[in-house]
Image (cartoon, rainbow, N blue to C red; front, top):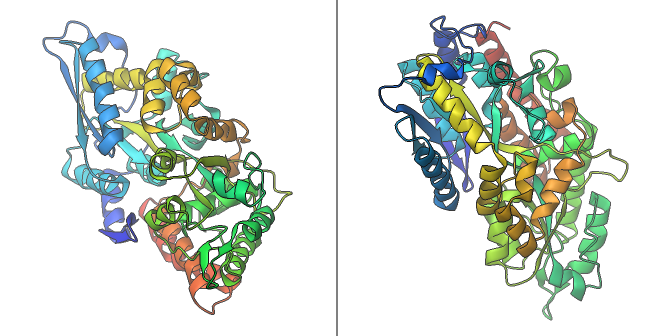
Length: 468
């Protein structure tokens, strides 16, 4: 397995042979773990009459401001559970690195009690059979899922069972330079809703200097594989076969669909007509193009909103992620990570203590602080009514757009996202095909078809490693 850095953003390029070795070592029987341990939720009684506090090691990928907010929640929980439970947070690096660390820990038989794994690692986490399914805790305690966001539960539910608990989740939005909109005579309260409208707005927003050089492009966004998943979900097109891998194990990717080819051709036309700046695959470069005023509209995660507000010298607006075409039904795929409780190799006390901490993180009170402090969605919808969340919404009403977009999203197999063991590799392949079409003479249809074929061997090898 090797980790590569791609244009300021890490992308997991997992060696399939290493991945297969991990799976063959741990097995894939959901009824029990690698060693046959019963992976079911213990009851609260296992924490009665403790001699000392149960230690919970929590691996995560939150640093900087997000890490500080998470640390404060950990401290709050520990203070409320003296001599009973002590959670220790451990930053492992970015999402790809954390997943790689976890794979290594499985082989060594030394996993953390609780781990944060990003959405693309979901199928691997299920196949590795190390964790207690979230549904087991829900059923054991009759835990009420009603306050939790349906779209988030939809993503992490597989075979009608919740597999992990959503936590640090986001969704992409369209961001606009409201000042530029007003100067161009456009209504900043009505951002474009589809690609055709983006082009119309970009024609008005693109500004040339006296020398004929473009000073402001109408649009500019990175070539980011997550956006392909988002565009497909909003067009009600599956990303992979077998109901996005939720009605049977995914055997092929489908991002060479005509809808995505249309999107790539539109993107190329925008660049050729000098209405969009060529960004490339770097999300950092995409953010910089927007905050510097180089691009008046962009696409980026809700997690970027805080930085946009701080770094821009213009008023930032936000709208729903665009549709490819006006007739598309809409929908939204989430990003970010969820929480998995390891059972294999851990005591009932440790498993239960981890669950107690997860419950604390999912309360409306905790989610209000988490949302307000980080900009991530509030997993618990009641968290938006908390004091911290309300104060942030009053100061920055743009944050409400993400919650509204998610609330308006229909929950189905398309918006659930593709469940596949090599999703990280598939996302990279989609980016490579998209970028090839933008930077060479290769037609979009050919580039995306070649990209889908490039993933096939990895899919086949992964599925063979788990016996499918």
